[in-house]
Amino acid sequence: MGSLDVISSSFDVASIVSQLMKLERQPVFQLEDRVTSLQNKVTAYQNINTRLSALASSVNNLLYRSSNVPLVQLSSLDERMSRSIFTSRTATSSNDNILTASASGTTTSNGNYSINVMQLAQAKISVTAQSYALTDNLGALFGTINGVQISLDDAKAQAAATKAFAGGSDTIGADGKITIAGKGNSADITVTAGMTLEQLRDAINIASSTEGLGITAAVEPAYDEDGITHVGERLAITSNDAGTANAFSLKIDDDGDENTPNLSESLGFKNTQSATNAGIRELQTAINDAKAGVTASIIYDGTGYRLTITSKETGADNGFEMDGALGALGFETKVDAQDALLTINGILITSSSNTVKEAIEGVTINVKNVTKDNENVTLNVGVDNDTIVSAVKEIVSAYNNVSIYINSQFYYNSALESSGALAGDSTLRMIQQRLQSAVSQGGVPFGENNGIRTMGQLGISFEKDGSLTLNESELRAALDKDFDAAAGFFLGYEKEGYTNRIGGMLTNLSEALSGINRPNQTPIKGAMDGIQTAMNGLNSNISQLQKSIEEYERRLQIREDQLYAQFMAADEAMRMMRVMMSSLSSSLASLGGNSSSSSS
Image 1 (spheres, rainbow, N blue to C red):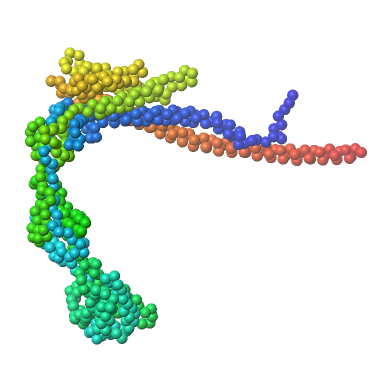
Image 2 (cartoon, rainbow, N blue to C red; image 1 turned 45 degrees about the horizontal axis):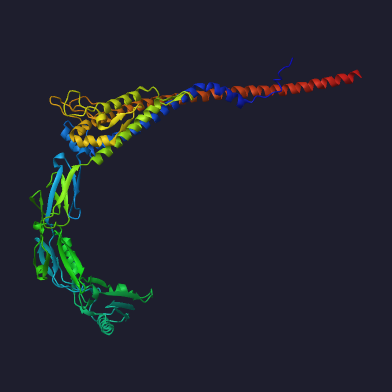
């Protein structure tokens, strides 16, 4: 019979503890499986919520277009109609070269309109009688346009001056060079420390005369600046002519000797007056800055530049008047201000703008040209069925995305023995039933007159799997036959004696999805509210399970440490036993050897 040689063996402590901990961790694995299952449900809810949000957006687009969704459902059909896409209108002109139009509003504007355009609205335009060079000086001008003050200062010459010296015969006290540029030419003036202001003046004037700099230097007496009186004299340089084209520049180069005074500091030149123009461009800027209801522009006529002034608004009442020196420039009126004149179905319409609003309710007409004699343009205003049909198709598509996903959760795959994460989920089943009910209960009850009772009358029907199909031609036919009845099916009808609407496929869907309130009724929790509640519950359970797992892991860590300590101690004991057995074996062997020797 075989035996286990425990003494000669050694424990694999890590492997033994690992195998034991797998058994100990089985409850944790079960908790983690539950967390994974719940997280899969949360993910599935998030997916359905995304699809429901897309459906809600499609529904709200048709109900409210781009405006905000109200917290309380609008109580009357007229209010709902005015906010919905059913107010979309088309306005088609028989001659886009004469006029175009856009429309929105109620069906009261629908129909054909005969329009004759006799006159376009114009803005007044005035132009200077003569042309000017851009450098021409107009001089100081003062006047008004539409009562707004316009002023233009005369052109100014540039001027620069040194700081104050004791007198004209006082010396500069520094060496260096001054470079002066003006009129497209330049000259260098050498300056020595012993040179006087008067000598520097003469040198500059000689250079100006010789090189054509267009400047004059002079020694000026005491002056006031910034409220301070400066005693003595200074050297001043001034352009001979006003305007920026006659400006000059100064550049001072010191001699570079650090042991001698600095020429720049010694002279202290600074600009005392900037060169300015008073030409046609400056007048243009002054007029535009005044904000007098006009725009000033400059046009080159081939020989020079002319200033044009145009009213910012068209219409006979939006012209302008000029007085004062501005009028003295000789402005000529090239275009008179006038209103647009047109007839709509023989009725004379006057408009200060070529954009004529509300002459036809909910319609904006843009007139471009006048019509010929005995010629009229036909404007057709009607319901924009294309936009409405497109919106309904979008809703059907978004609804089917929800329906197909819900069905995928309930579908059982017998081969794989698997189903969706939300199979059998009561919240999801409730959402499916609520949406189907909202869609199917849009019509008026039987016994009522002049209403659409079923969505089939609009070309909408359920398939066997709960999805919707849309027959576009049948929807268009229903809109053409009785637009108000079709709109009422989607928006909800009114009934005398009822505080709320009857039916309303889209209003029902809006309530089913978002839980929007009805007037005077308890708020309704929508499908997305239910999903959020369900996800909150799942996330709460996940959080609790994760806390349980963390607590279990802490206990398992303690247990693992204990097992390691126990098996390490056992392994150490076995090691010591092997040492003792080895020592005992050696002793016995030694005794056996001694016995053999004694016998011999």
